[in-house]
Amino acid sequence: MFGKYNDTPAAISLGLFLLGCLFYVAQLLSMTASWLAENGIGPEAIGVARVLGFTWLGLTIGLIRTYATGPDGQSTYFFALLIAQIGILLNLWHQHLFAEAATVIDDAIIVTVLTALLLIGYFRIRSRL
Image 1 (cartoon, rainbow, N blue to C red):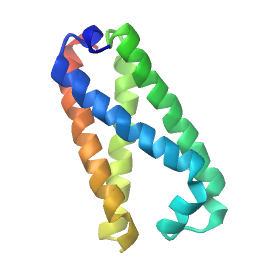
Image 2: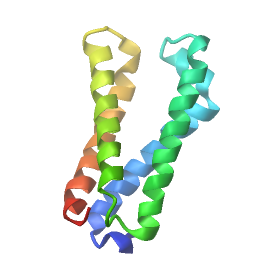
Image 3: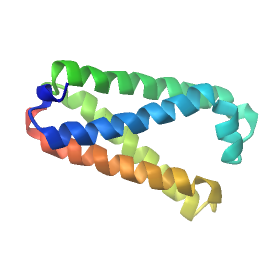
């Protein structure tokens, strides 16, 4: 499965990022109400959270497909993935630092690690995109 990348560290980094994405997809789709309550958000946001979950499911399936076909020619996909991930990172840290939403610190730390993994993988395969 890692062979299509021709770069084991990139494939491992993106594989760990993939696991993190699958974790968030599971949270957003199957444990929506409890995840929102844990973060101090009311049940009126369930629909939006599930839309986000299905969006990340699509991005995750796209990442799985790059393991099957290789990352060659997938620059638009990886660029979109980077923009989404960096946007989420900035939003979570903004909520924690400026909106004083103390409940998002765990997600902010997890997303920081996931963003680092994505960046490592991206920069290692960038020349093939």
